[in-house]
Length: 88
Image 1 (spheres, helix red, strand yellow):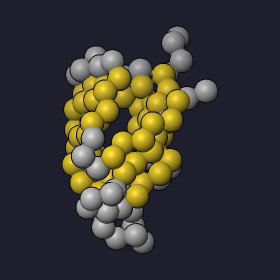
Image 2 (tube, helix red, strand yellow; image 1 turned 90 degrees about the horizontal axis):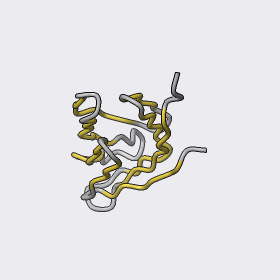
Image 3 (cartoon, helix red, strand yellow; image 1 turned 90 degrees about the vertical axis):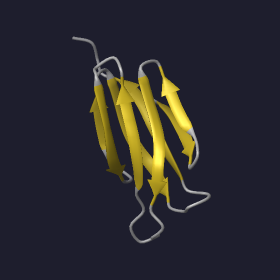
């Protein structure tokens, strides 16, 4: 079962080689999104990407699924699950 995490607007999340940081959250409640800086040193991956609820990102051995995106310049946050790719 994947573990669920919450990341606040000014926070940073690290798990092994994976690091996430919120660059910004949208302010429109009709189109909530978060712009994230995503880095996985284990797979030499890095990018800035917009995410919305339901988006799934596979990076190296990690699988991120975004379950909540709350817009706002001060109180915006995201929630996501983090799982590992099954080993072959």
